[in-house]
Image 1 (cartoon, one colour):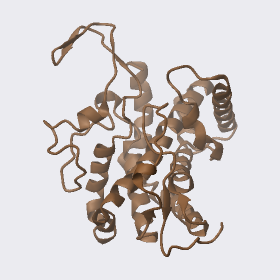
Image 2 (cartoon, one colour; image 1 turned 135 degrees about the vertical axis):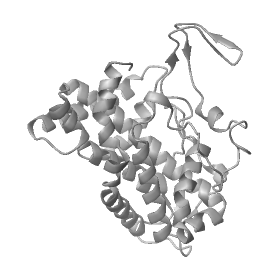
Image 3 (tube, one colour; image 1 turned 90 degrees about the vertical axis):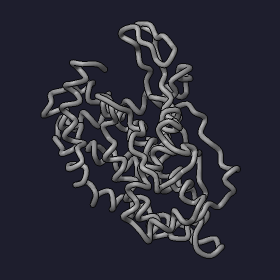
Image 4 (tube, rainbow, N blue to C red; image 1 turned 180 degrees about the horizontal axis):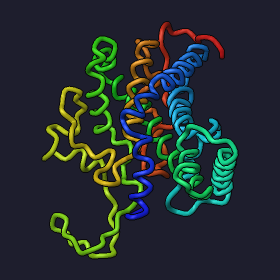
Length: 315
């Protein structure tokens, strides 16, 4: 989306995702996280951190922000968000159900205004039901698997050197910088979600990109540029990660970046407090990565355990 449509949309939503507004969500996010930690404690070990904790935390948070019901079946929407090739028939049916459910949510908001973002777009901004449903679909996808994958992959990175994991408990003041380095190091969106089209001839490096040609941006290439970051392939929570492009840049910079940072801070803080001896239950090289149907990356599951090597209790 370009100006002027993008400018109007961005101006309407900017205040809803400002640092001040997002900070007010801390107590709600803490409750969502604590509920999932309680569920972990009741579950049999080992358990999958991705499905039991990371995905529900991310989905619960974005649904609260949007002002819609949490639908657990949406945890599988990543599987139907293929960009190329087109959706297969069975996946297309699942995707259409997702859109139908979002349309239903928007219709209910039309009748009963809410404090959430989608109700704001309907009643204050004056967008149509179809426009709001499209915005809701996009924000659920954008704010769901990106954040959940960051929680799971971040846990994995911090577990590779227990000093990083333990540092969260002993020095919470260092957590914001550690999270920023995780965001740079992991770069959960491997490719920019959309291609960029040149509006005029432009030379990038020694390559001429002509007007009308499309460019796909590699975020990891930017975040591991040795001219910007010393030893870029190392995770170093002591470094200054300022300048990473995980959230993009310019007028299209990620609208939900402050929300993502808050979710990560609360998730890691609470996770370490509740389960200081949390550990992967399988060797890292046995983990199965996702198939890459979305321009991000993660693992299908991260089995974890804690405490004594017993089977735990059944939820």
